[in-house]
Length: 446
Image 1 (cartoon, one colour):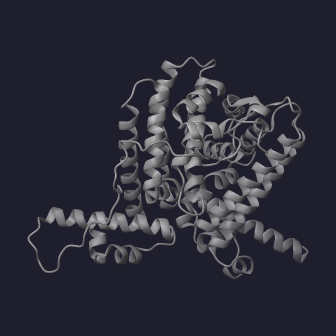
Image 2: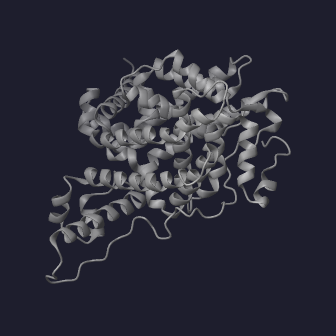
Image 3: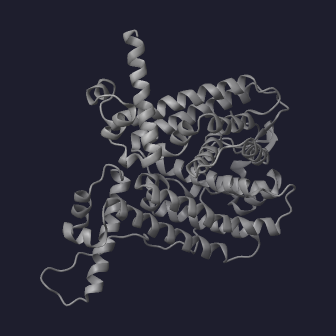
C-alpha cells in the first residue's frame, strides 16, 4: 500500500474511532486510549495526526461537516422546482438515514465539546446557510420561499435528527416530509420576506415576571470560627456556592475544561465539602442545569398564564423568557450552550425540557385554526428552532442580546399556527411604534 494511502487510512480510522467512542460513551469519556483502541492504531500514530483528543474531535466534526456540505450542494444543484430551504431540510434528514453514526456525531454529540469545537460546528452551519442563500438569490423574483434564517432552520433539523438517532430510531422519508411541511408553513413571496436575517430589535417593555435581581447569586461566605448556624443552613450555603461557582466556570472556561479543583477554589469551600454534595463535576454541572431549568420554567409559566388568549400568552411567555436569559447570561450559557458537555444525563434533561415547552404549544392547537394544524413533529421543530435561536444569541460575541430577538422567537412560534401575515400583524401590534416602523419590509433583504 502506498505510504500516502496508508496515512489517509490511518487518519480515517482515528476519525471513525472518535465518532464511535463519542457516540457510545460521550465526549467526556472519549480519551485517546479509547479512540486508539477503537481505531486499532498505536498511540504514537495518533499523535502523528493530532495534537490531542480535542484536535481529533474538531477534525472529526470538520470531516463530517464537509461530507454533509457536499451532499447539500449536490441536492441544491439538482433541486428542480422545490425551494432551497425545503431541499436542505430533506438533504439533512437523508444524510441521517444514509450515515447515522456520522450524522449523530455531527448533529448532536459535537455540541458536547469545548468552545473551539462548537466554533467548527457553527461555521459549518453558517457555510451551508450561505449555500442556501446563494441558491435563493438565483430564484425567480416571483418565487415563494421560506421566511427563515437558514442557520436556524439547519440547526433545528440538526437537533431533530440527532435526538432520533440518539434514541436508536431511523430518520425516515416520513420525518423528512413532516419537517418539509413544517418549513413550508413559513413560505411567502420572496419580496415580502422579513425574517431572513437574525437582527436584535428594540426590546419591548420589561416583563413584570422577571426578577429584578439575578436568579443565581453567590451566597455570602460563612463567618470564621464556629458560629451557631443550623447544620442544614450551612450545607445549603455550601451547595449553592458550589452550584454558582460551577455555573460561572461553565460560562468562562467551559464544563469540559473545568475541574473539581477549579470549582472548590471559586466556591471557597473545602474539597471534602464538594464531595459531600456531589460525586464528581458532572453531577455538579447537572445540578446547575436542573436548577436553571426550574427557574426558567417557573418564570415562563407564570408569564404564560398571566393573560388570556394563546398568541398573547405566547408573547408574554417569550418576553419573560428572553429577558430572563439576557439578564442572567450564566443561565443562558449553561442551559443552552454547555448543557451537552455535562454528559448523557444532561442530554436527556434537555430533551425532557423540549417536552415541557411542548405544553405551551398545545393550547395553540385548541385555539387556532391552522390548516393543516401543525403536527407533533412540527411542534418539536418549533421548540428545536427556539433552542437554536437562544444558542446562537448566547454564543454571540459580547453581551447576549436575547431580549431583542423576541419578535423572531414569536415568528418561529406563531407562524405555523396563524400563517405568516396574521403572525406578522400580531407581532407588530405588540411592538413599540418605533420598532414597528423599522420592521416594515420595503423589499427582500439580501
